[in-house]
Length: 106
Image (tube, rainbow, N blue to C red; front, side, top):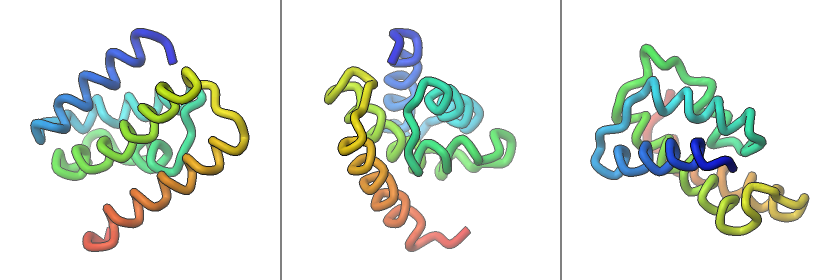
């Protein structure tokens, strides 16, 4: 993951911790993460949201799942996941998303 993308990720993570994530920035960040090769269900789900209509609360929750996934990629392999890790991260992302959406049907 390049330095600029990492800086944006950390900035949005900090905003989400304060329950102040900007839905537009969160969605655009997820799109950029996909382009950079960080592909997991949590990233795809956030990237597929509407930047205009996504409520800030939902942006905070979804961004938390994305940052957990991206941070694991960054710490583990500097953004280059092998197939086994990619499979485990995808499972982690599905688990996080299912827990986030279990009590809040779309």
